[in-house]
Image (cartoon, rainbow, N blue to C red):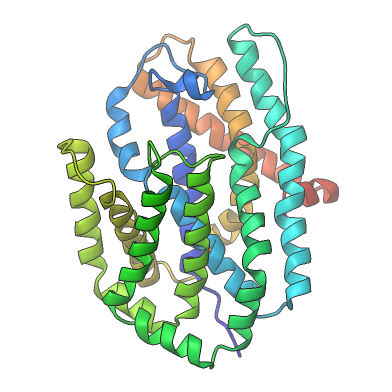
Length: 345
């Protein structure tokens, strides 16, 4: 079977990493930023958190969905052993390298900025996402490999029929609601290194694979209903953040899935085409994700003490972070051993 590359999924991955940089930069301008280990500007920009509150219920789950989709495409030209080897090299090696060589650097910058004694105990920090993904690969690989090898089987035919209708989204919503009921996360948006992030990511990874396995029927369905998903997601965001209406916690996963389906649908409709920018950014995105906390903290430590308007500080810090990451990527991609540690093939 000839499989055309899905450029829209590549674009969504790149865009989501870009949103991550904006989101993490924005945390530095919230009065509570230091409490979760960020260098915090003495001048806050609280209003910035309103759009960030829209992002924070779907940006990380979307990355898990996209990661599950990536496994489907990887299985087209690999057996399960080859896929496991490839994912170990691409995910587990950078994860371990990051714990011992990346995270200590930005932790030290944070400690130095706040005049703390330098100390470090190995932990994944922002790289927790990679650890989760590798666990999901190990967990789901037998099932995914079976489904991929039996795409014409009865089980997949049922899945494709179900996911060609918006009613097929109901079991997806139900699964995420059960996760909320069983874990009772507070807040919902806190995913890092906890059971909520583990199980929510697991569901998103699984359904991401199922979405692509469902074939054209699923993508045509979400494109047809894309405006409905967008309106529902935005309406629930208005209730939750702007109007601050007390609503059921089970509405947050509904908002999450609606945002994600709308992003996938608009991406499929408008972004499924190659470009030079995508070719470059899709290769750079992974090293940028691994590195970004170092340059964010370096930029914050240099820029935050300056006598600048808070909006300008935000913009300059973001540009510093992006420029530092991209500059370092240009070095990494030219050195074989560094390519290995940053998951570049």
